[in-house]
Image (cartoon, rainbow, N blue to C red; front, side, top):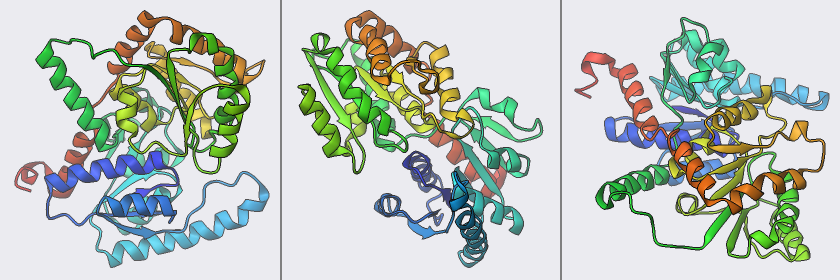
Length: 376
């Protein structure tokens, strides 16, 4: 059972790993547990897996949310214990998020082995609390290890990505080997803005104005802006009022192919987003979500900035308006092709294309042991 969710970035890695587990262990019955959001249920069921709802709530941000936090999580923990017994679950994979906490704790209580995936360079409280009891903690960053107990079984695997990214990365590597690294035919340059994730509203609000300030440099560029649900019309209105030609959509369905054919991406810095950027090898301007717990997104972005694979804007330390900061950082990325090429190479150097496969192997070993894993 893969447990987690509340954000697509927590769910996608689980679906990616599940696909590899299904190949390694065809007889395995794979299910997902999450908070029950429609988009999550649709994503899991479309991938061919069962989905069960476990009530859960994130840590409250105000006193009004405190009661529901307590009641939902108690109910979720009890429900998780019953579901684990009813489905005869033999291994839990925690993906992060509040549902993951309930199910992983229930597994620990029932003596069911569990593996934890940690997407961020600064681990969550749940990962820190339960790391020693896990069969394996698969982390995305080397920088995560010092935050965990020295006796915790930790393996740096990288962060799993959606299968489409794995497939395109493999295809691109084969193409480079075949043609000796020749560049792709000339195409229109493209900048992609990834709003739509939790807390990305400030990007949707500031980016149109920032691009207006750079309009002279963007004559030959295509602008593609993912707004997320409920923000499309307002974002389109901003572009229209400013006279900036842009294609705004609620969600980009073929996100992998779009990313691999882009020149600059502006986005938040969740673990999944960064892993997919690395496989696509696309330079990025990262604007970490200012209210992520324990500044996890800022810490993630700093790892990539240290490798000179991205530019970084910390909203919490901005003296002026966000649109001016965005315009300032984007200017050099747009006008300097050599800079983009260098950052692309640095970004690709951070790619971990076998993350899903390595985690699936750890799951097989946890189920069957080292000696009998090959026979599985």
